[in-house]
Amino acid sequence: MLSIDRIHVAPVKSLGLAHPDHVHVGPMGIEEDRRFFLINGQGTLLTQRHIGRLVQVKAEYRIEPEWLSLGFPHGTVTEGAVELGASVTARIFGRIVAGRRLEGAWNDRLSEFCEEPVCLVKSDESGQCYDEYPISLLSQASVKALEKQAGALDSRRFRPNFLIGGSAAHQEDTWLGEEIILGQELRLQVVARDPRCVITTHDPDTGEADIDTLGLIANYRPGNGVAYFGVYGTVVHPGVVSVGDTVALSSTPVQR
Image 1 (spheres, one colour):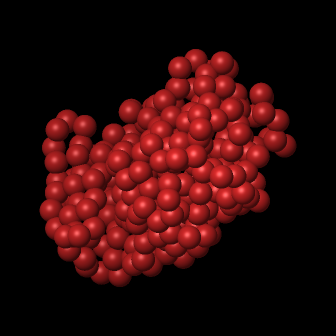
Image 2: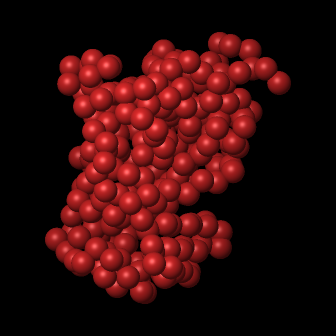
């Protein structure tokens, strides 16, 4: 039986992951996922592609009452209520995303850590800061299959929203064009394979490049030079999802 093994969210795009037991998935994705993003001194999106060690900063976010915490690797924590300042825009995967700068110590702490000017921004609406599609899925079996090429791997380096257990390796690829049900309510349309980027070559704890996952995936899963690993989905019907919930094709009776 397919089920959700783990949930990954990044309250701040490219920072360390949080692993909630349950999430609410709205029309544009998980409400707490990538609600914030970073820009550099030129107003350009800043991610792990530019500074790998950003993953060492752990973010926690609560919507109501709104509260954000950033934990830095040497134990310093900056936390508090979210206070918004000036409006800004940034380009994220070809889209112009509007948001507002955060007021307070966040920017100073992040700038010190990155050794360059950095500003933390809250997007005006949830679901604006995804890469190509709102939801990503990957099976634990696919990670295990890649381990035969790469050695031990942590699924966090692939940052899937939902890590699926109980499947065959790359079974998620067979869901393309299908509708799947997660838990009691959430319905997703699986719309594309996930073309992986250089972030997957970074250690998920340190952000340092350590394994050529892109080359390994491309070698054992030929895809015209693209390292496809996992799939993307869009939301057909929102709902609450918890770790341990079942996953099934909409045409398949769900076992209870």
